[in-house]
Image (spheres, one colour):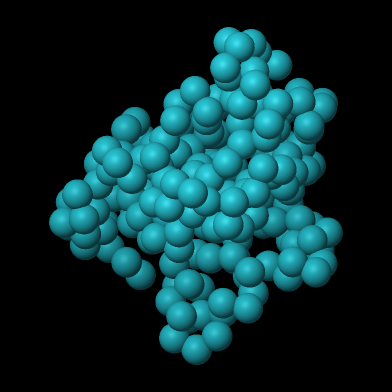
Length: 197
């Protein structure tokens, strides 16, 4: 197990600092935006250890081979089969029901490549497991990270995705690879016009 003191040392060595602490809810989904590098996971893992939490993230099962696979498992990563998303969602919902505390980090982009339409798996899991969603973020320019604020989901996943994207567009966190972070055209338009969804 990775200890708290080592995590604190590493985060300080890398120049990162946190904003706020752990979410008030013991079970929740924390979005990790913008996700453009595997380093996002590394920073998030060690940051949450420094503040007394363990963040679990879902990562494609193809990466769970050899030393990297063992390293990911020890750090709370959950292998997912992207060809069977419903089985993955069922397993995560079960994990929420069997744990007293579970912070699940999800990158709704679903990839480190540029993608305008984010995936709604986090929404499906949050609704089914009855857990809240927090709007976590990384900023590689200021080297700050946060679990963010709690976001109240509606019954419209597409509306919520637009509202969440607009929140991040306004916050404007700097990704590690800026060219890989984009928003829906309608979100960019709403941002320019000062509109809400």
